[in-house]
Image 1: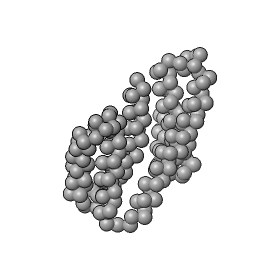
Image 2 (image 1 turned 180 degrees about the vertical axis):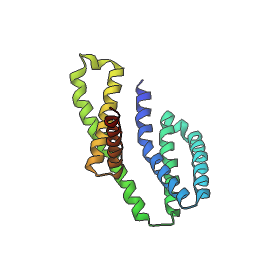
Image 3 (image 1 turned 90 degrees about the vertical axis):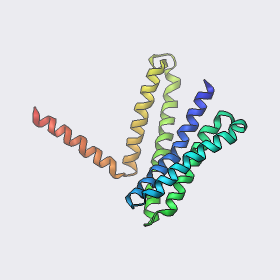
Length: 172
C-alpha cells in the first residue's frame, strides 16, 4: 500500500509538467504550429517508453512518474522555445497557475492535517468520508486561493453561478 501511495504522490507532482505541456501545446495550436505540438507529443511518448525501459532496473517502479514528469517538462520547454509571440505573458500566466496550485495544495494539507487527528475516533475515520472531506477542502482551497490571487476565471464562475440563481428566482 505504501508503494501505491508513494507513486500516487509522485504522479500528482508530475502533473505540473503535464499542465505545462498542455498550456504550451494550446499555445502552439493557437499560433498555427500544430505540427510542433504533434512532434513534441510524439517524442515525449517515445522518450517515456525508452527511459522506462532503460531505468526500470535502477529506479524500480518510481521510474514511471519520474520519466513522465521529465518527458512532459522537456516537451513543454521545447514548445515554449518555439512560441512565436510575447513569452513573458505566457510565463506570467503559467506562474500564476503554479502559484495557485502550490498555495491551494499547501492550504488543503494544513487544513486536512489539522482536522484528521481529531477525526480518527469519529465518522471521518471511514476512507470515503476522508475522500469527501479532502475533496471539499481542496475545492474550497482552490476557490479561496483563486479569489486571493484575483484570477479572472473565478469571477466568471461567480457570475455564472449568480446568473443561475437569478434564473431560479425568476422561475419561482
